[in-house]
Image (tube, rainbow, N blue to C red; front, side, top):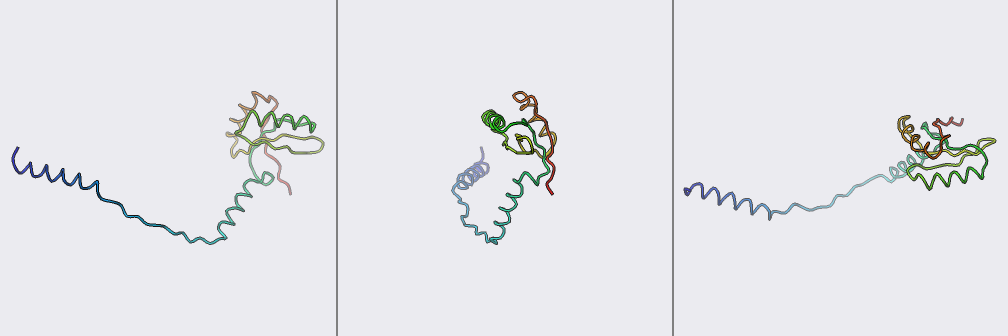
Length: 130
């Protein structure tokens, strides 16, 4: 090995080892945000969770008496924790509605799983209240 290539090797090795000692800069970031933005975000979350005004698909697993509806809702909640259930009263029956699906495909996938335990389940879109 000649002296020129030995010098290049030593220089490369020295640069490689010294680069591990270099430290990054540290600092802080301050975000100044109007407090009304947080209020608007909370309002948006609330609006998105209100079922009555949504245009989403739901699955109905029961319609009938209140005591049986409560029993079925408890059974559903213990079997399926992926979707929320809701007890709804529509004269003259109590109904159990499940989930809030953006697309029919999402609802169909859930329905396939739910029908194994609740064979009379079906998909629907709630009517908007005026």
